[in-house]
Length: 401
Image (tube, rainbow, N blue to C red; front, side, top):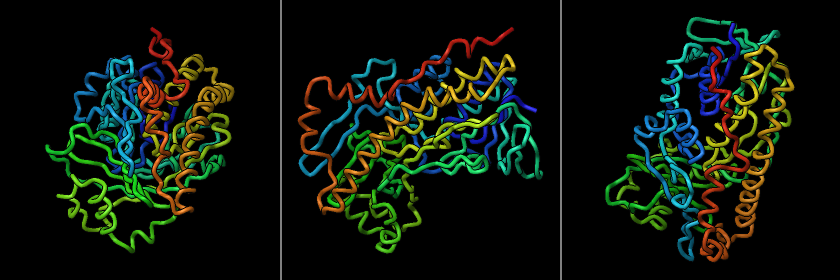
């Protein structure tokens, strides 16, 4: 028996498990894979996330891991370059977005959580069912097991098994784009100020994320357009890079096969009800965030903080009810609705441009708008914190004697 069973070792589940264990709540984290090493997961740690880890006394050690501090977010369009956000203007101890491989971030949090007496991590543990009295049934290398729990938290991602078992469907809001991800090596001669950049062509755009040793590159395609792209092979992608990112031209031939790419089917969706008695959904299990803005990790970790704020007290007192779970949704849903609405608007604009045969670049007035003093800093702050960011309740860390 555990107080809380968290299914899914992504950022939301991992941070919530850490916070609960640090608050003295026994928690078991179930991760279906044997490690956290997935390719092309979100790598962006925003200033709000870094400030949270500073509050937890973990930021210095976290940032000792290899990462790239990204200051700018830029659009490269046929009419010129537009800097839309400058994180250097954000009033924070961490005025940048730390681009760090997500697996390293998760390994770090898991290692710190293991030092806490109430935390248990089970790798290779795949949830197969929900227990009537609360908790989960799971399978690992030793067979089938039951884990009774006062509360089960589904943090198992966009294809959440627990969400399906609980009969809590997610409703699509209309994503129009998919992304094909791959990596190319980073060279010392590459542009030093390249951070998070979008390069727009007539029918496609490329997202470029800087990393410690390589570039993570996302090539856009229409929703459902992967079979045609796969049939065409890598040469159209390499041609796009040669034209729009000529400084990568000396290594685009390293992309030789479509098997070097990973398809990310972009989704924007939300569950109407994030809870039922003894069960709470957070992160992508409750609301899928598109890669636009790179704030999927931010939203998931903010869910974790909001959940810890609401649940630690009732869990300590043994008085947890579904009203407490509903309060987590009430706290977080307005922010999620706002973020997803902006993403849906962007998706619709890109889709409309494709249908009309027009370039999919951002509107021309954006360059004039971002030239207004303060706009770049304001845009950076909006993305750095998200709408209505939660603050960690000090009571969460005040472990009872």
